[in-house]
Length: 214
Image 1 (cartoon, rainbow, N blue to C red):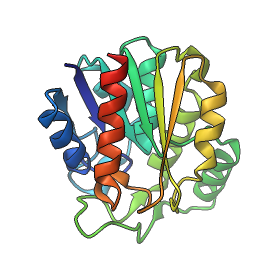
Image 2: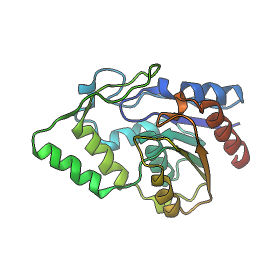
Image 3: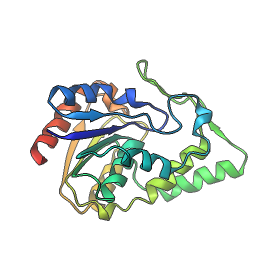
Image 4: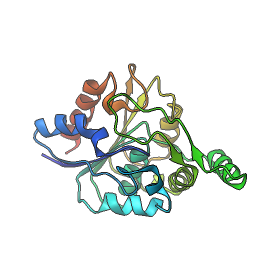
């Protein structure tokens, strides 16, 4: 059985990953789903938090497999790039996007500080507003991940109806990775796949991948 670290996305909490944690735990794996720095309190807590803070938090718990959703998926790939795990799962991860960096920097330069009315699922514990500075820290961090250094087996999961991250992002990531890549597609639900309609199918895909490669 494996030690599995599960990482949530921007604005969320470890609770976002609980259905997956429960399924993997039932399969005999040791699981951990921390709430990342700046999360779980109030949106202002994200101000001043850096990508390095999130990576350090992920590295603080030794894991055989790192599973992440959205920003957490990109963090999982960053951890894999350091060689600190044996396999990686990225669910609806962000691809490097120079235009997104430019757009966020432009908004900050014009005095815009917040993204308001962020969509949150009914059973999701997450911020409904986000500081643009934190989104910029995330976007710059994603751009800095050395995807070519990821040589471990990877599972990339995409939600067909994701309205936050273009599913084509996983195609860009898959081409950059240097290890064996498996793909999975979820045709029900949206971006927060661990809480959405295909959560059971997602858990099965992740557990099968872990059992196959470890």
